[in-house]
Image 1 (cartoon, rainbow, N blue to C red):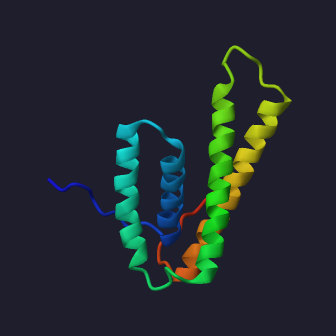
Image 2 (image 1 turned 90 degrees about the vertical axis):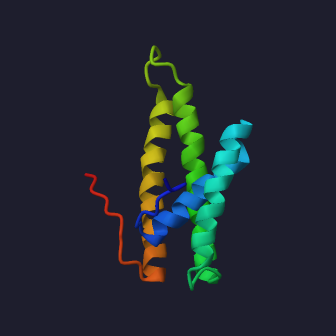
Length: 129
């Protein structure tokens, strides 16, 4: 049995996953979970470093924005999770939920930018009203 499988994804999805794993590696404290996160991050970075545009400054700029959006999503989701199901949603809860879906839309746009930069043949498609 293989230690992992390779799955075709868009290049934007690869960098999105790397940014999320970096956030996890900065915020998770459980040693076992952190070990798993760092292992996966190493494998994905190895793949990314083999791409021709890996050191492109434009990619760096988009990537930093993508990571920032993912950090905002992480923080918002943690805030939403703090709410107890017994409490009715208040203005803060509603504003946080709205900001989360807006950030997810921004995240999708940044992944698309990366896909275009690299000429990815796979694109993630969204369909929300």
